Amino acid sequence: MSSEEVIVPASAPPMEEASTSTSSTPTVNTNTETPTEENKDKEDESMYECNICLDPAKNAVVSMCGHLFCWPCLHQWLEIRPTRKLCPVCKAAIDKDKVIPLYGRNSSKQEDPREKLPPRPQGQRTEPESTGFSGFGFGDGGFHMSFGIGAFPFGFFASTFNFGDQRAGLNNRPNATQYENEQTLSKFFLYLALLCLVGLFYS
Amino acid sequence: MANIAISRIKREFKEVIKSEEIVQCSIKVELINDNWTELRGEIAGPPDTPYEGGKFILEIKVPETYPFNPPKVRFITRIWHPNISSVTGAICLDILKDNWAAAMTLRTVLLSLQALLAAAEPDDPQDAVVATQYKENHPMFMLTARHWTNSYAGGPNKVADFDTKIQRLKDMGIDENQARACLSKENWDLEKATESLFS
Image (cartoon, rainbow over all chains, first blue to last red; front, side, top):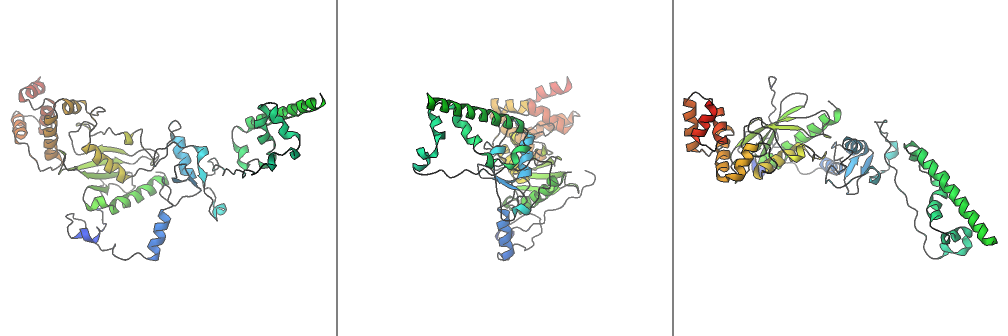
């Protein structure tokens, strides 16, 4: 510690404590003004600070336990301890696929400064459930008939009929080929099911 | 050092300085060098413990990977505590190792250390000798800890008997710190301590 350059904390203790304070810190009255607009803004902003870098969150994501992070910060945290994925604030279980991105109005203009990071997880949009019986009516054609044959085509319907809904980020994933294989397989089973149906009708 | 580490330490430094604890003189942080990689912390011994009235200085080293990895913290002030090495000042505290979380700050680390002083974990010791004394001869541990606080951290409570014993060993040409460490280890049995020092 040769280059000792100790900075004495020059903060001002709040007024009521200042008189009793025995510390040698200089008492400067900086905390006395009433909250101004600027202070209010600062307070508002601090509510949206990333819990890791303490700056206003960029590419914000929020965990299931409700804690806000920059996606690059959280990603780095999860990478550093792949075996213990815990929320940096409350130590709840946390997962890459279970965080929710926050899209502010101008969020599309922001660009990720760290391009090498994987993209922020996509928002998961679920279609509203159709209400009433009409959706399950016979008028829909033969597809629903296949439910009676067995459970196997059931799961594949969702993926097969979601062609238009392929998520943009999906192809960036390392398991994209596996996903394609599954799709091919599911189509195969769908056609098999249809073939069985036709067979049933004619028998 | 990575930008995130510096900017975070700067913010945390301000946070500690603004915090209520500094007003109560219970924690303090000072800067050692210009590149924010080394800091010096100070915590007050918590009340109703043998550390009461003492000021304990800590060495805080901020790694390049901060805040994704914990800061390296060590007691510079010598202290008699089961979870702190009486020789090196190394600390055994889960949040400074595996249980570190990126949202923890200098302030929470210092407060955690203060809490550690108030609630030792003798079953997960850093200093086995101290931990054994803590468990098997607790009144002796309390006295020893108070004596160390008085000798090294400026605590107000002298233990006259211990001071005399140390003086006896000093008269035999033994370094004060060495004498204190040895006597503490031997439960202040002067004969045993002399034996172990001269054998």
